[in-house]
Amino acid sequence: MAKPPIVFVLNGPNLNMLGLRQPKVYGRTTLADVEALCRRRAEELGLAVDFRQTNHEGELVGWIQEARKAAAGIVINAGAYTHTSVAILDALYSAEKPVIEVHVSNVFRRESFRHHSYVSPASTGVIVGCGPLGYALALEALADQIRGARRKAR
Ligand code: DHK
Image (tube, rainbow, N blue to C red; front, side, top):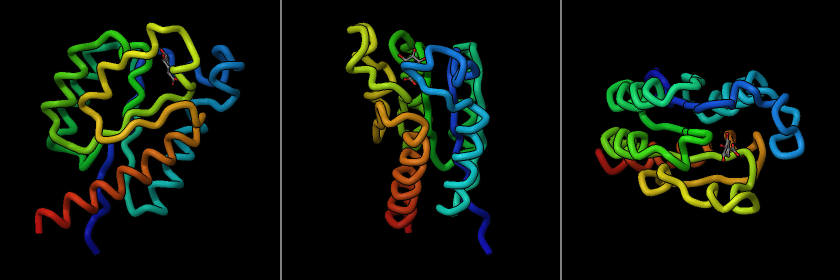
């Protein structure tokens, strides 16, 4: 049987604090719970997940660059870098992969500086405000887009 496509699930700064930080905004689910959820859903969808978190912008850029060769698609929650990082936008453009942007909270109900995303222009889909479930929804969308891209390539 063919190997399942690898998808990178990339998490930016402070997402290691999920479950502890501002529970009214982000809930009580930890990043380890999110990873377990992603692994379960990915298996059902026939995907393999490479799940990572970093507090460093350059490391995130490096992982996105790595995805160009190593991954069929990317799920990304860039945390606060979403609202500040042209470097992440440029890396996502150069990855040339389907990208689903995820935010646990509904950023549009929050401070206005969270309403702008540098990740969105390079994303094929965006899931916002669905809590940790957003990651599972993102994987479902990504699986569909990867299948579509493979069909086109045939
Ligand atoms: C996570 C963060 O760390 C914030 O900086 C973003 C995002 C929102 C989230 O909802 O997952 O503004």
